[in-house]
Image 1 (cartoon, rainbow, N blue to C red):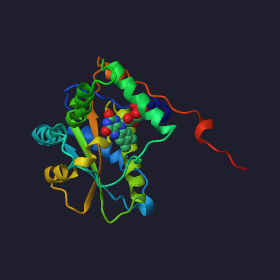
Image 2: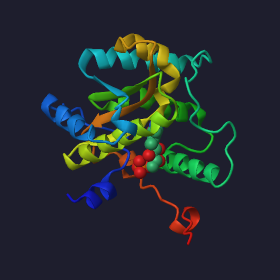
Image 3: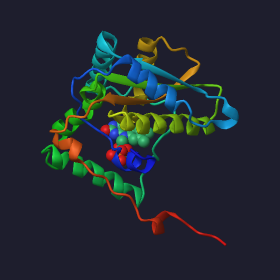
Length: 222
Ligand SMILES: Cc1cc2nc3c(=O)[nH]c(=O)nc-3n(C[C@H](O)[C@H](O)[C@H](O)COP(=O)(O)O)c2cc1C
């Protein structure tokens, strides 16, 4: 695959096969991904690879916390705006409606929407869950570095026949996550990612997302 093929073929996968991913392949993906740039090459990230019983126990506790509906779980950092405005609101709604449509969830069916969201916490059945953290001493600028690492993971995985889904959904559960990882209070739990082999028969994996035309977001000056 060329770099362009890899970019065009990557997409978020939300149902994985139970096929295990060899450790050597995970290591290869992460080693290649770590070629990501970072400001002054500080490489402020850490990656935790969850598999087997550790993964299962991790998922079970976080899923239970989500299903409890408790409001005690809050992200350590702001991701989305407090109030969405256009054109972002429309884009956000579209992916929700498109995904729910593919899996047969009707508008307003809150129970099934919640169950679909809960699938995040099973890593969409992927056998491998990745957690990305950065040292708390670093500011928001360093989140860029980790985003580049994550993009490299997704593209390298794709080039190696694997698929991924980046998952901000885990962020509110950082206290539980930290405990399972054995991570220190000095790490910000930034994002999770499912890693595995896509289930080609799953309707949710046929979701194709659009992108705005250049004229909507590019300004040529000079
Ligand atoms: C930082 C980040 C967090 C995301 N969090 C979630 C998530 O929690 N659950 C989910 O299903 N998708 C999540 N996504 C996937 C986006 O919905 C997806 O990237 C977007 O709709 C574009 O689709 P594509 O990845 O298939 O191109 C996340 C993506 C990014 C970049």
